[in-house]
Amino acid sequence: MKKVLVMVLALVMAFSAVSALADITIVQNKVEIDAALQEYAAAYSAETGKNVKVITAGGSSDYNTALKAEFASGKEPDIFVIEGPTGYELYKDKIADQTGAEWTQYTAAQYMDGDKVVGFPVAVEGYGMAYNADILAKAEIDPATLTNVDAYKAAFEKLDSMKDELGLTAVVSMTASTAAGMTWVTGLHNFNVYLTVGLDRNDTSVIDQVMQGEVDEERFHQYCEYVALIFQYSDPEMLLNGTQDMQLAAFANGQTAFYHQGNWMDPNIVALGVEFPMAYAPHAFMHEDTDGILVNAPSWYVVNQNAGNTEEAIDFLNALATTEAGHDYMVNKAAMVPAFTNVTLAPATPLSKSVMEWNAAGKTYSWQQYKLPDGFGMGTLGAIYELLASGAIDEPTFEQMMKDAIATIPTL
Image (cartoon, rainbow, N blue to C red):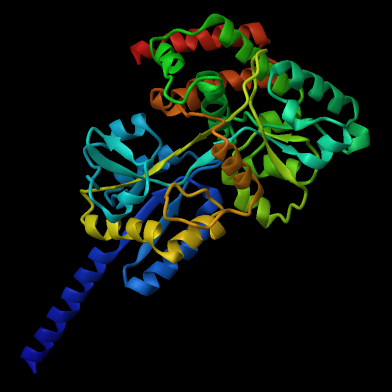
């Protein structure tokens, strides 16, 4: 009897060890896909017997702080997200080589370290100035003309003069709130407008200059004027205190004509039952025409080779890219634009559909904001945007403070 008990205990312990090894933890930064990813992870767990736990931080909470806390806890995640060179450099000693994984044959958007494939593209994402097509039509503004800052100035002025007639509280739904954790909108995504708009996708001249602590004086001046223009026609309360949900609600309720966010907000737009037509216009901040939006693989899933579940983690990513359930999750449930050539589904959600149309037309600019030093965009630059939003500084002071901050980059 004693031998039987010992054998049973041994089997239980062995099963527990196998179960523990099969647990996969994912830390990811897209709050807008959390529900869809949780649902997919649960279905994957039920099918494979490998328990997948999803931890989400982002939106109005700082993903990088949450990720560092996970590593500091001693329970390192199996899969986590990097957003470019800065994130990769922080964690490259932990990141597994995925060269030869099944998913790699279906994309050209993987994150590379030399000849090694190290990152799985979460999606292709894009952003511009989203607009409510019905409101622009009522104001007799053709969004196709919004390809330079002079056209934007005229459109903003006209819409502002018609706010009562159109039921608007502001022309633009924009937030610059430090307290609400929204400085990624300003210090990363809006700053990238300066870094890439109007340039060929492989042209890194502006970000290279910034990394040396310098700016193109005329280009940067026009950019700073564009930021001031957006803030001028935004709701001051929203600028200073708005969360991601509040920013969307103003646009979704028809209270603004424009919305400074990306297609990653499509799941929330669908959940709110928004019915008016919308699409993207360019962030055309210069006097010359720049007819394109900002499109890139914004982030990559990487596998932690130190967590003990490398094979299981890669299996999970392979399933995302190669199965019908994975494709359905990416396109229909998470409303993303997949980075994989074997996905035949097309998004029906409005902003993702607009991104695909701009991308198909070849009218896109790249993302270079994640080459900035860790924390510089959200922390250092984000605080300066908020000062302008609050009225504490004017546009010339904003421009000088931004240049002074950029000048410190080589010392960071």
